Length: 462
Image (cartoon, one colour):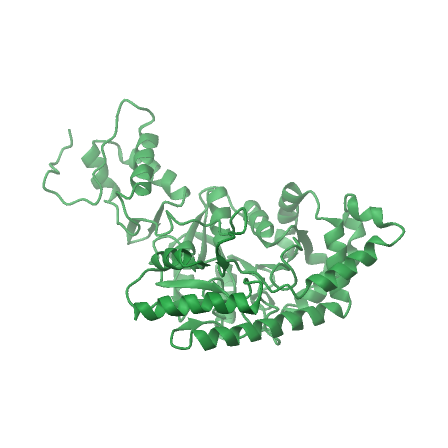
């Protein structure tokens, strides 16, 4: 029996476990996971101190610690120095955003897709490639020595996004998500902690869960990652690095100021932290701000994905890697990729070095501006964050409705949006907001139909 009586003692969780099942820490972890998934323990609940729980269950403190660690590595718990351990707000969220098939009955305003302006130029370029006498080489294995000129194209694209690099730092990956996975797999070990914005790209969350890494939420100030909070995490949270989207942060559509870019770079250098700079949206501005990597290139892994700037089907990302990390990340990419598609790599490189690249970027930008003008027209009475060249907006909700509740409500009316709960990290409280994809609807008419539904539902809440 426990030494102390807990009959009238307030505890947020009083589990009952079968002590005949061994090991006990796994049995306790299973019960904890079950109670979270069944709603016995709600997101944000602070768990009892480990010593208190050990006394209540008459178990060793190490048993409790091991159980908490198991659930922490699954993303179910979040802890911070001096605050305790909480049920993660994102414990029950679905981080895999894209469904296996496009929902036929919903207007897609959830997935962050660019418009389809690039498809015809890419098709013409591809037809030209396949009419060349040695076209069969695009269907074989690519070799590193055959891609040197393609790395020149990568340098050109990355420079267009605000970071000057050289071909000896360039690696290829099968998309940005693949590059993030390879980077974390090579630089981290199970149980390591990395920092990220308190609402972040769900792909980071799924990779971290797969690799048994813990994401530490870094607080924001006016939707920008706070340099002070980053430094505090370096000192107190035992993080190894951070993940950052400086331009059009996903999902809040914020843009990191030059001042904060410099400050975060300086802190990373001071504390020897790596930075994964996700440059997915760097090309959306006509005049991009300097990349964080430009201030501390020896600490930053810069990932330039092409899925949002040219076309989603180009499963290719260019990765500019500091010399100290290049061998490790190169090996990880090889083990994950073996090789990138020679066909897509050549198609992308030809598009970049030709005038088509700038034409496509400008065409995407013009389409996005027109669509955002429509969004502004319909949602003028509500707070909808994001710039005119962004392909998604962050819609703050009126009243007391949560993002998850609003997502379900609009889905019943035929529109798909994504709630803040899908993006929240650890014990951060999710905003009452949803991400609205501007370019995902196939036509302007479909976009307007979706916005009319959103406006009507938002008016009903006010």
